Image: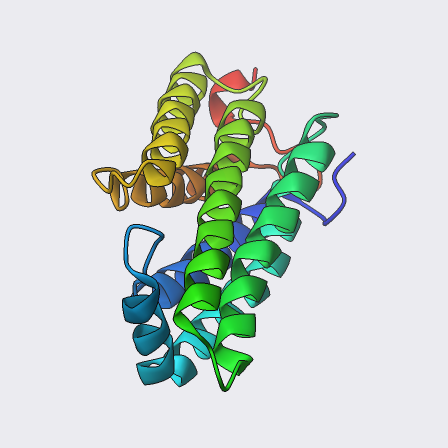
Amino acid sequence: MRLFGTGRAAGGWGIVFVVILLISAAMVSLPTGAETGTKIATFYKAHGSVIALQQILGAIAVAPFVAFALSIGPNRWLKPVVAVFVAFELATNAIPLVMVAMSNLSADTAYTLTVVEDFADAGLFVSVAAFAIVAPMGDSLWIRAIGIAVAIACVARAVAGLVGIGALDFVAPLAFIAFVLLLSLRLLLGADEGGPARPAAHRA
């Protein structure tokens, strides 16, 4: 039983999430633990208002994502996976907001909080990987295969980010966005208004 209405409604929520996420991601790229504490503190002081707005938008995006994810269809694994995703997403939003709010942000504090942010970000990508595997359960084989590919990219991004490798910084997030968009469009185009959010290919 879906929690937020029809399959088409789920597709609409997914597209809203994608739009907000793209706007947020385009605003600014936050420094990581690969930078020095001095550079991090200087960056936050110079871009505080933009960073704050970006993190607020990121937190707002949680609502349409939850509505989308929990409306995909009956799946006992979705709730725990979505709960973990929300926890890590809000953590990655809260830490930069705390840094922006600190009027006397020191280099040491900036570096320490950024390292914590890096771990939270890694956890977020692992939760995204879990979602990419769980969400298309019962769907077409090719959709599940795409989900697995997205999951692999996200796990690789989580590990790479912790060791200071940025090769997947854009690939993994874009893969996740494209996957959500794909699921959303399939729900919008193929779901019955009052029935389960089944892929069109599975109908008699």
